[in-house]
Length: 236
Ligand code: NAD
Image (cartoon, rainbow, N blue to C red; front, side, top):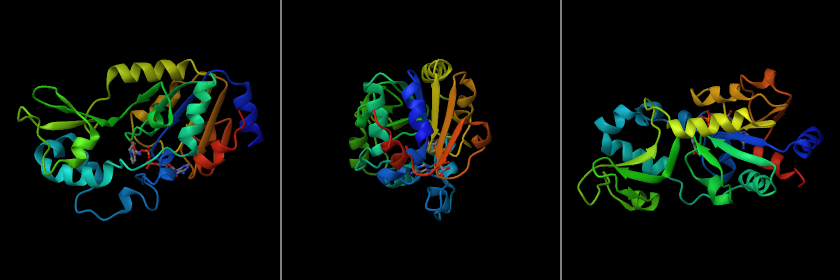
């Protein structure tokens, strides 16, 4: 903790790169932990259900799963989201790059957020491009339809879909210009997102994760624990 505090004190261009583990302390399950979605029993795997092909071939089943598991509109930012927003406000952090789709960084006050996998908070008609909120999707029944009759699709990057190029460019630019990269709450197994860490050229690579990751050996500092508990100890 002392080393982390020193690194934060010294840094002026921190980038925070996070995954599903950043939101577990808000009550949203991740994918790969003991109580994660991948350990729960489904006849079809979550990877299949959250794929582009499944969305268009089994749209009703997709939305049943999506509404139940991927739309935690009740969730509130936890200590990690709040500290990260505070670091940005104090001019120490330049960007958040997240694999999460829950919008909790923005809810905590973060301004520069690159959402590599999109967001549940925007939903677009595939026919006329009209936009709908997450609340409207949550309240809809069966397959959500636009007023024009078109299918409404969440602006979430499904398996088999490419990342948004503007988001990718912004994320890469931020990581490449950071003096410190804090990687947290991610198993670093979902590509291409996990590969973004390799653009870092700065001084301190910090990893905060409950379980070991493939990056542990390459970091300047590794803290195994809960990201909210750890970040809340940082003094600003
Ligand atoms: P993952 O489920 O593969 O891994 C989560 C990692 O976080 C694990 O290594 C676990 O040890 C760690 N972790 C869990 N709780 C933690 C905590 N409180 N503090 C520190 N570490 C903690 O998640 P991933 O690597 O982000 O990949 C999963 C994919 O699923 C991502 O692409 C993401 O888009 C998506 N997803 C998003 C949400 C969300 O938006 N909240 C939730 C589930 C999955």
